[in-house]
Structure formats: C-alpha cells, structure tokens
Length: 324
Image 1 (cartoon, rainbow, N blue to C red):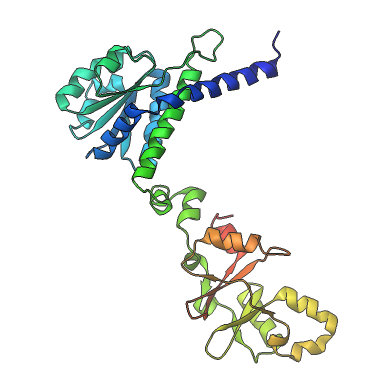
Image 2 (cartoon, rainbow, N blue to C red):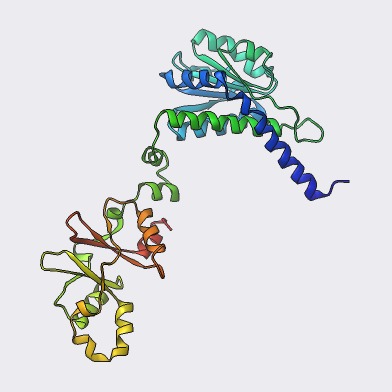
C-alpha cells in the first residue's frame, strides 16, 4: 500500500508529466493564437466555468499584468448581459476540458454575432467548442491525478501552464519591459523595488551630511551627530567625493587616543568608497550595500555625473520603504 508521502509524490509526478505532454502542442496552432492576440485591437477575454473558470481568472490576470489587456468573463453571467463587455475587436479564449460545457457553448452564437475571434483551449479537439473556434489549442492530458479520475487536477495544472506559456510568449513578442511591469504593480514591495529610485529616498540638501577635507574629526563628529545618519561625506572645495567617515571609523580611532580628534578627516576617512547615482533603483543600492566585502555597509554616498556628492542613503531608508 502506498504511504502518504509516496502518494503525494505520485500526484506531483503525474501533474508534471501532464505539463510535459503539452510540449508537442506548442505548434502552429499556438503560433496562430499568438498572432491573433497580437493583431487584436481590443482585449483578450477569458471565459470558462468551474475549475476552468478559476484557471481562466488567473490567466486573465497574468495576461493583463504582462502587457496584454485582458479580463475574465463568467459565461453564465455573459448570457445575462455581461456579453455587452465584448466587442468585435476582442479575442475570446474559452476554456473547457470537455469542450462541451453548456454555459460556454451558450454564448458562442452571441460571440459570433458580435464578431469576436474565438480561441478554444480544450481537452477534446473534436468537441463542439473546438469545432466552432477560429483556433484550437489542445490542452488534453492522458490521466488526471485524482485517483477517482473525476476531480480536475492534472488537466487544470496543464491548462494553467499552457496559459502561462501563451502570456509570456506575448510578453516577449511585445518587448514588454520591467519598467512597464512596474507601472501595473505600483503597490506592495514589488512596486517599490521596481519603481523606487535612490533619488526618491536619499537625504539631500540640508539633510546631506558633508564636510570638506580640512575639517577635523571632532567637527565631523558634530555633523554626524546632528544629521543622525552615522556618517559624513568628505569632499574637496568643488564638492567632489574624497571619501567617507563613519561613526564606526571614529570609534575605532579612539584606540589612537583623543588627539586624533584634532586631526583632519582625510587621515581617518575611507577613500574611494562605494557610491551610487540618484537615477539608480533603490533595489540596486541595496545590492551594493549587502554585497560589500568583507562586510555589508549601511550608508552609501550619492554622486552626480561630475562625482559631486548630492546625497546620502542609509540602510534604514530602504527598510522604511519596504525595499529590504
């Protein structure tokens, strides 16, 4: 008798094999669907009932977030007025494993009268839905993972993966970029990582702790304390970066005796520190700070094209903005 773990592993293996069954089905019909959607002046409208409807909702969401305008249409609601959302410029992608789902078949005549193109994603290429579609995508699999052969399992997994293949192929064909993706995902940590730049969160102007090379360590310490960022950028008379002095440098300097406080900061500062420009993503600043060797750094001077210091970024700024 199968153990609990071996049974669960069997389910995963069967669903993985179901996806692999579809590899030969990335064919001329797949290309025809891609071309039809690319040429579409409207939207991709996804429809399906039950579990196919759930897969359709996810498919519509993936398409919409990757550059293909899309929405999900419930077929049962469609026959009660929601078909008014579909236009002749749209492509309807209808999901049905059997290809005989009544609610989906019921909206086909209206879709034809509207003039929308129809792509059928079916498990039966000889079904009624397939026969009435412009393009047929056969996503049928040989066996469900359900031991009763009843609950949609392998078939929905395969359809989901095939939908992802379609959406991401369209993404590539549209030359969809990370910046465009970010526009559709402005909320949450994803949006912050994709949209937030160093210039958005750095401490500039009066908040930027800067001293010149002739400043004493003691005077620099007062600036560090006043600005509260744990460091000060050291610049020449034209404002160009010379180095950085941190409160950690000063603590380590105490081992030399208090006389070092009267010395110029150039004797204690770190020369040629890591820097970044204001137009870079905050996520890139995080990478620079975390990957510094031999240990991560907590502050990063921000410079312009002429190597002039225009700001300072602290790790806590990244944490506060949810980039970390």
